Amino acid sequence: MTEISLNPFFTLLISFLLLFGTFFIFSSSIGMIRLPDVYTRSHAASKGATLGIASILLGTFFYFLFVEGELSSSLILGIIFVLITLPVSGHMIARAAYNSGIPLWHKSVKNELEIKDREESK
Image (cartoon, rainbow, N blue to C red; front, side):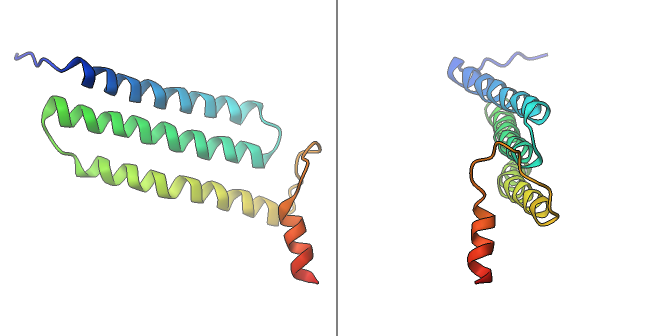
């Protein structure tokens, strides 16, 4: 078995991206448990998962690039797909919840969609 020596900078970069992604996914899961309503939970899930999964995929991409010497186009496409679809799906789920009449948290300060709906109905 051959041993591959890797530049310490790349080792730190890959490790940082993997730990950064893990932290955001973990904080997103805590947000899903602790936050009070569907809108804040959707926000936590979509933002945390977007940063977390994109960071882990980027760390994996750098691993394959610097250690294995392979340029993985499927990882690049996966990163782009996650960065585009996760925020949009989180927004659409929150919008569907709002249109279904699910109330905001009782301590919510401002409902911009209600103001917009009132202005459009005039």
